[in-house]
Structures are given as C-alpha cells and as structure tokens.
Length: 310
Image 1 (spheres, rainbow, N blue to C red):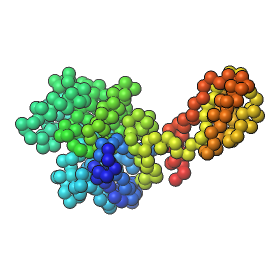
Image 2: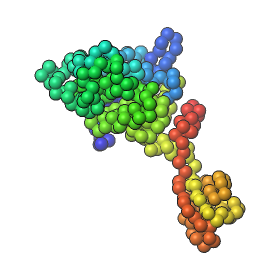
Image 3: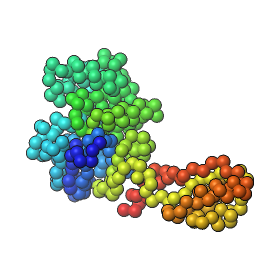
Image 4: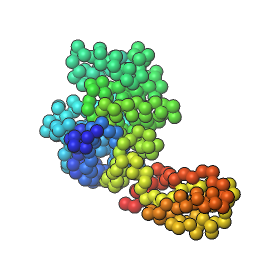
C-alpha cells in the first residue's frame, strides 16, 4: 500500500450532539486504501455515532466527510455508492430467503439488473453462504445472519466497508469465522470497524483509533499500540536459579521479580541489553537458562492506560 495514495475515507472535525449532550466532538480520521482500521472505545464512547456519520446515515452538526474524493454532504449519491455499511443491528428481513434479500439489497445499491445474478453468486461464495440461499434468514444462526449482513453491505463492491460491532453476541467459533472474513475484506476493500474486543485489534486490524468520551485520544498502528508505555524487559527461566542480587547486579537491569522457583521477570533500561550478558553469565555459572522471552503487555492494560491518562 502506497502512503502517497489518497485516503478512501477522510473525516475532518466531526461533531454531533443529541439535545444538549455532545456525543462526538471534533473527530478527525482517515481510512487508507486496503487497510483495516479498528475504532476502539468503551460503550458510550461515540463509536456507533461516528460510524453512522461516516456511512451517511446520520448528519454531523459540524465537520466534513469525503469518500473516495466525494463530499458526503454535497455529493451524497456518488459518495454513498462507494460505501457498504453494517450497523450494530443488521438490517435483515427475517421472513425473507437469503437469495431474495440479497437480490433486494443489490437493487437498493443500484447494481445493474444484468449483473445481479453474478453478484449474488460471488457474494455468497465470499461470505460462505453458498448453501444458505433458499433458507429463511430468521432460521439461521446469529453467525450466519451476520454473514448475510456483511453480504448486503458489500454486494455492490464498495471501496469503503463500515462495520459496527460485527462480532457482538457471537460464540467463539462464529467470531473466528467473521474475523477471517473481515481480514479477507481488507485485501480488496478499505474497512473500518468498531469494537470493544481488544483481541480483534490484534488479529485483524492494521491501525487503531481509540475514542474516549466522544474524542479521539489515540491513533497508531496495532503493532505500536502493543508497545505503548511498555518498559523493556523479559521473562527468563533459570533451572539452577541464582540469588536475586546476582541478577540485579547485571548492568542495565532496573528491577528483578521472582515469579516462581525458576522464573524471573527482568526490567531494564531502554538503551541496554542485559539479556545477552545474563545468558553469558548463565553459561559461566551453571544457571541452566532454559527460556528467555520479551515481555508482552496485555492489550487490556494498554487500553486502560491510554484512556485513564485522558
């Protein structure tokens, strides 16, 4: 993906109030071509309201939205033709058959009549619905209903796909399947999704934006988020464990915590590399080093640290 390419979606200074309560305040973000962007936040942070504005389902009280270069307020037909939207509650007609509903969705999205049959075959293949065409939507499991919801959002091949809590209420197997589908969508579409499940960020998102009380408080790559505020360190297993004082005396080591009889948590200065020295000492002194692994901060802890600092 080239950084020089214009974004698929660009929002500037969005604000939205309900009565006297400002739900979204001065939010700006962009969705790059071919990426999956995760919109994180506690319940009530303003995620759904933001996505509804980006999809054209709710007008902002201030700000501007561009979809593939088209202004959503002044060129709504051109902009919305490039959007696929799955709201938190999928817009399904439970009494309809899957095929009939998806044909109806294709017509609403102005897919040319001659192309609808081919679009239906392709979208069922992509969403794993090949054997569900004649089934009534209301008889499907929630996971398959969610697949139908995603199918209606992308049957017209939009450049931008907006998904609001796409795995909410699903069981672990269904969550895995929907996450795989979303990751595949990122290969051919630009995807933005809201979630409060931090595992989704790690498994499918290229970049993360965190909302808190209606404002964006953090934005960076998923990988860098996992490094946020983390002190360098590692976990080491020494079968013939030395005294703590011997480990603490290693140059660069700032803190050592004994986790078990043979396992130690070692924190060190950012510009030092005591792991190399420790392994050399272990070989010299017979500490029997078995394993050394960098510390991995939990995403839950990072998320709480970011939002509590605001």
